[in-house]
Image (cartoon, rainbow, N blue to C red; front, side, top):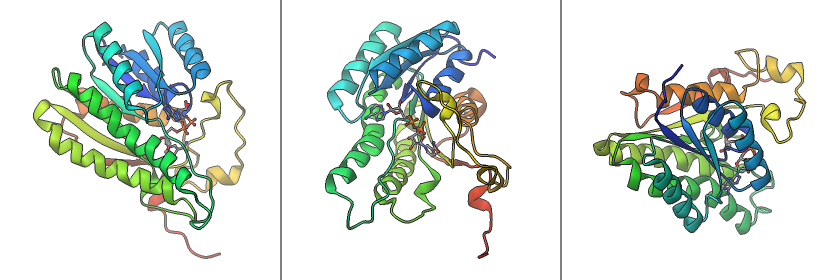
Length: 255
Ligand code: NAD
């Protein structure tokens, strides 16, 4: 398929994991890809992998929580390609699992800065250029924004913030023909998309627990991103899409 020929995208956190699968999928469909990632080694590796598949790709070492790094990278990518059609705010970090009393302000700030402020910063700087042509912004949240186990507060709050930020942006940016959508994935096994790739450590129970019969793959999320970024989804904006193999709709009873 050729849905993104002549188009360009920025995928944050695209060096590995879900972001790498998204970059690969958009690139395979003709998009020129910029990976913004804090991990230089993984980022350079991913750029080479994309190029091996005849995808036009460039890597920028960017900490999405740094306004200056974001501003410079967006400016440079636009100067070289003259358009930014798709932004996928995917870069994110997890949580320590410590109780609220043990969580530190430093941990809280690091997670909020990367996941939520990073999404806001990349959007802010991309919109300057995207509003010239219109485009699509897809923000990766999580089912943990609305479903919890104990001790995930900074992460859950950052992801809930991403969902709220996304619908606010959708309303503000509609006049520029920019659509904004958040995606909330459930459990996705990223082993194959790590640098270097790893063997999955999943048990049969991990798969069976999902109504769909398996844990998610980064390719599942990438396929949804490609649909949402395409013209087939042109009437979709402001919404949040859950993709979780059915876990959040399943009723659980005590054993
Ligand atoms: P991952 O750790 O495999 O990859 C994350 C990427 O983001 C890495 O390449 C990392 O270097 C990059 N990154 C981290 N901090 C950064 C920063 N400050 N600036 C730029 N890049 C940075 O993670 P993943 O599992 O692929 O997750 C990707 C996104 O999906 C995250 O936002 C995560 O919260 C979300 N998510 C993941 C799952 C899951 O089960 N894997 C489920 C729901 C949501």
